[in-house]
Image (cartoon, rainbow, N blue to C red; front, side, top):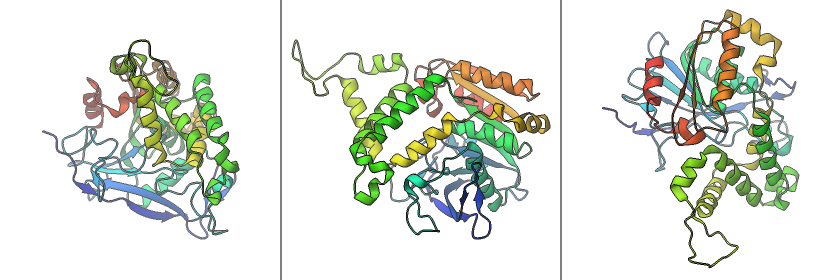
Length: 369
């Protein structure tokens, strides 16, 4: 029997303090990097039972349980908890918001210690290694030298891959779900349209919208609506909504009428209250440039790693398709890395990694256990 976690607290740590800046791959530096994180379970006396959970593009540190003062359970509450695949009776689980985000970790709307004002559009472009560097420092601050496992879906899975490339001896098991080692041209195309919708909004104000007391809400809404279409399968949309609409017979109107239109309107509106436009731009661009196997250092790192990988894709996920996972698997195996790969059947598209498709949780449980 599985049990939900109770109330959890989001904690904050300040890393890379004065005299010890975070040096980004671009050459830029960030000082006093704040990180929002949650932990579940207890760290063993030997510190060998830690699992790091990496979130997707618009996720946050709240992966499981109920946060004080909120009704929202964590975004991976079905995966993390007592008796669940990532069992908090056995493991010490760490979930942290990533660099560039807008949910407690340093990002574009954070204050630059050098100026006392928000970075805004001057926040530096990030490499996936920069994200990993922050979370590696957080793990060390919690007394963990080696992770029993790192687990992530979508962007989170890509972070796990980069982590092994950057620190090949730090992770025992790497669980990569619905991810890619190099975004497809189609993925980059979707992302550029989303960013253009945001930057083309009159209220974007060249990224300084907060200084003007406005937000590019219309652009953000369009970006989220379009992205959401790519996260679900055509079959799921047809099953859930079909061509059902509000009007009847031969009535027609330009306003949203079909149920799928109302659904996307809701998804877009809900997104506005929890995410920042500049973070969306920064993190989506981070993904475009992600290509660890093009880095000459990757081959040397993987030749030294003992990390075992589990890579999982879903047959209805067309945003991060099975072909993209297979490419990653082939690259890892070519470097002598042990990989357990499977494509699972699910009707839910890319969102499958957040749900409980048949065989999915058992697969993760068996590998992590």
